[in-house]
Image 1 (tube, rainbow, N blue to C red):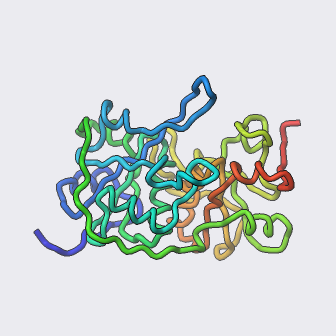
Image 2 (image 1 turned 120 degrees about the vertical axis):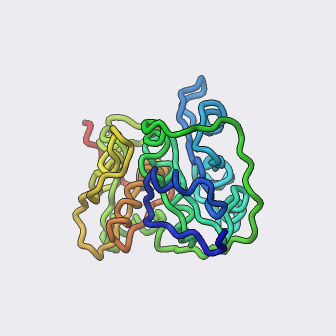
Length: 289
């Protein structure tokens, strides 16, 4: 087999492309699924590992733990992004190294795959793509599934170099809100979370000046595939866009769609509303009154 690196046709690959490359040893396929559940202690995010093991996954896919391995478990909020050292360790634990190409998918609407893609791409990994339509499209087409655990292949070194402009922090968002910096704020939370009618946080609503671009504006609910047209945001082609949601997950899908459409300056506010709403002096707009 050729030792040349496996090149991707795009940052979004089709089920046909993946099916044709599943046996390629240069490819790492990752299931990044996370599930939400109401428990006696309230709502909790749970690992998608059980569904991966029992319900099945794409043959050869390795499970990527977004809750623990690909997040900072010591961070103040769920899914706090890891530092570059932890990200590299997590990547190597799934079989990623400098010789391999990565395709990520999930069992949801693509938001979890988008989050993992964003983490890896923002960390400097170039050969990484999202499977368009994810597991739902793969299953709808009658393609094979595999159950049980798939052990990652041993990985050599992985070279990462952070792209800091891909992330926004609360200080930058505050400067935008106060008119001291220029950027378009895009909220990817649900409609009712955006308006403040619903929400799991003590303070509800959206950051002032935000436009609403939910996950369903970038993903087709019937096929789970990304929509062909980029979401509409009121910003010039070179203006910075900062996407946020509850915890930086759905925002990653919106940010991915915008970057893929050619926008060069797109960032994810990692803390998102989990952080912003916890700050007593951070303003929120509620339309539910």
